[in-house]
Length: 393
Ligand code: SAH
Image (tube, rainbow, N blue to C red):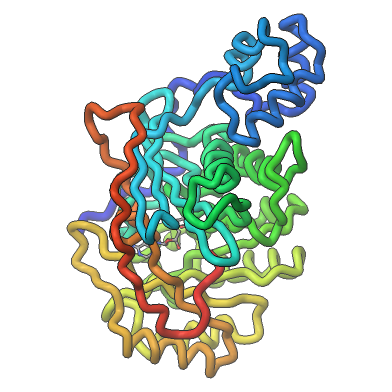
C-alpha cells in the first residue's frame, strides 16, 4: 500500500453561498435589516432552518412577499441529496450529499430503541491518510463550511421529527463527528457547528454536551484548543495502537504527535471537563490485536478517565487487512477489562450499505443528481455484539 502525504491545509475552492448558519445572530439580523425587514425575521428564518424547513412556502410566519428574498439571502440550499441507502429495516440511513461545487459527502443516521445518532462529515475527503480508512485514502477535497456541517445534523433531526425513520416520530439525540474528515483540522467551522448543535432554539438544535462526540485522529493542538472552549462535548481519540512504532504506520499523524502526547492532551481534556474520553481502536487481524498490545494499552490507560471502544475493522476495498476474529476480540477485551479499563465493542451498523466506520468514500454516481432515491431496505447484517454493551456512538 502506498503511503499518502499528510495534508493540513485544505485546497482553496469557491466558498459556499452565504448562509444563516455561518453567521452570528447579530450578523443574520443585520442582513435582514439591510433587506428592509425587521431584524426578528432572522430569528424566524433560524427557527425554520433548524426545523429542516427548506420550502419558503412553508414559512407562513414570514410575509409571502418576502419569503423568497429572505430565504435566498440566508437559507440557500447547500446540501442536495444525491441518494439515500437504507439498512436495518430503514433504521440506518446513509445519505450522499452534493455540495454547491460538486464535492460529495455522506452522513449516516442510526436509530436505536433509546436514541438516534447521526454521524456527520466535517470535510470532503480527509488529509490524515490513515491506510485502513476509505476516506483517508481518498485525500482531502476541502473543508466544509459550518452551515454544510450543521445542515447534515438538521436534516437528520428533521427526518426523525417528521417520522421518516421507522418507529414513529422521534428526536435526534446524538451527533458524532465520525463521518468523513478530521474535525479538528477544520477547527473554526467545527467550533461553530458545536455551538449550533448545543445552542437553544431558534439558533440551535438544543442537544446536550455529552451527546455530541468529536472524534479526532489526535491533532494535539486542536484537542488543547477544544479544552479551552468550555463546551464539555465527548472527546474520542482514534488511537488504534498503544505504541509509537505501530501507530506511526496506522495513524500517520503519529509521526507529528506521539501516543504519549495525545493521551496527555486527552487526560487534560478529561480533567478540565470532568468527562470520560473514549479511545477508539479498530481491531485489525494480526496487526494490532495481539494480547501483548492489549496489555500495553491496558497499562497506558489504567486509572485514567477513559474507556476503550473497539471497532472490528471494516475492511475497505483493496486493503490487505481484515477484522480480528472473534476469539482475538474476546481476548483483547478481557485483557483490557482485567487492567481495569472499561471496554466496549462497537456494533457495525450499516456495513452492507458501506455506512460503517471508515467506509464513507463518496463516489460520483452519475446522472441521478438531485434525485433522492431510497434503496429497497436491505436486511441488516445483524452484526454480533459479542462482548458487553454496544458503544454509545
Ligand atoms: N478523523 C476522525 C474521524 C474519523 S471516522 C478520527 O480520526 O477520529 C471515526 C472512527 O472510525 C475513527 O476512529 C477511525 O479511525 C475509524 N475508522 C476509520 N476507518 C475504519 C475502518 N475501516 N474500520 C473501522 N474503523 C475505522
